[in-house]
Length: 142
Image (cartoon, rainbow, N blue to C red; front, top):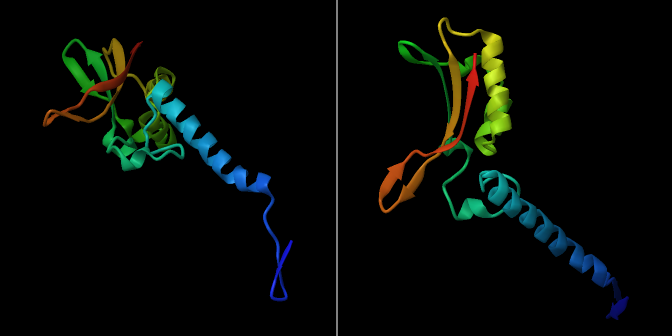
C-alpha cells in the first residue's frame, strides 16, 4: 500500500496484472488454431479476424439437393434445425454436414432419389474475381 496525501492507494498484485493478457492470448490462440484446423469463420470464437476478412457465417451458404434420374432437386432446408445450419456455416465439417443430411432424410426422401448432397459454399475474392468455392461436400446414399 502507498499513501498519497492521506489517501491509501492499493496496488494490484503483479500476478493479477498478467492474468488478463494471458487469458486474451489463450482465447486468441485457440481461435487461430480452430480457424487453421476446422476452417472456422474468423468472426467466431473470440479472435480478431473480423477486422481482417469478410469471411463469416453470413457469407457462407448451405446447399442441399437430391440426385435423381431427372437431375438434381433442391432439398427443403426449412425443416432443418437453425442451430445446426448455423453450426455448419461457422464450422464447415463433414460431421456437421452429415447431421444436416440425417435431418433431411428423416424428413422424407424424394422419390427416385439415389443420393443426397449437402455442401457449404463460401465466397472468395481474388484478383478482382468473386468465386463460390465448396468448403465441404457430403454425399449420402439413400
